[in-house]
Length: 260
Ligand SMILES: NC(=O)c1ccc[n+]([C@@H]2O[C@H](COP(=O)([O-])OP(=O)(O)OC[C@H]3O[C@@H](n4cnc5c(N)ncnc54)[C@H](OP(=O)(O)O)[C@@H]3O)[C@@H](O)[C@H]2O)c1
Image 1 (tube, rainbow, N blue to C red):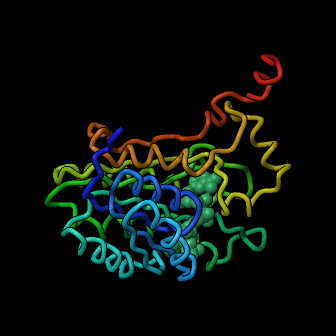
Image 2 (tube, rainbow, N blue to C red):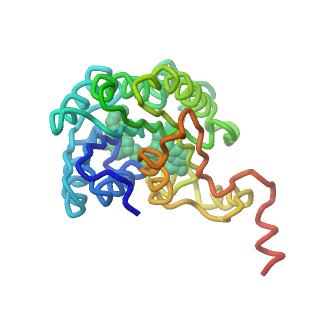
């Protein structure tokens, strides 16, 4: 299916690996010119080299936890055609706290990475979408609806803040023909997830997953790209769960045992 991205510009923040990388690849396969960012310069270079095989891509090593840097990213992306058609705020982290409570620095880091970067991105792209319209997708998390105990209270609340921000900014930008949605991935096989959970913990979590498995990054990327496309023209201010039905039923694993 042609999603209508030929000749269009799409930006994905935090895209040197994981879900962002997969989103960038899907946009390229759809014919968009893609601009990505991440902090580590070598990581950005490697991603650009690998993804060039699928189309035209530019990468910038920038810390997205700053309005100034997001503005630079938007300016560079807009210099390609004069406007930006799709923008994905993907940056996020679930950094563990060092003790029982968060230090001020730990707290600030999670708030900036999960929430402020999303606000900065939405603000930075606005001048380049307001004439021709466009679509923004904010990558939230299943944790904003159903978090794991102990390890994710600030992460979960910041992702819930992303959901709330998405609804309100969708209303604010609607007069400019800009749609804004949130995608809530479930447990997805990326460096972030695999670095944070043991296999035993993941097996326990998957007992409550209707599909009984982790997502692959491409399975999150495809809905993100669809939501960014004209085919999703009546979808805005939505929270789209892409979770394999996680915690929609408890003990979902029993279906697999009984039906085999
Ligand atoms: N994986 C999951 O199971 C899962 C589930 C729900 C939601 N999510 C959300 O999905 C998004 C992507 O997660 P992921 O699992 O793909 O993460 P990941 O594997 O850690 O990849 C994160 C990407 O973002 C970049 N990044 C991180 N902080 C940045 C910053 N301050 N400025 C610029 N770039 C930054 C990283 O590169 P550098 O380190 O070089 O900057 C990397 O390219 C996050 O918002 C996460 O919360 C993930």
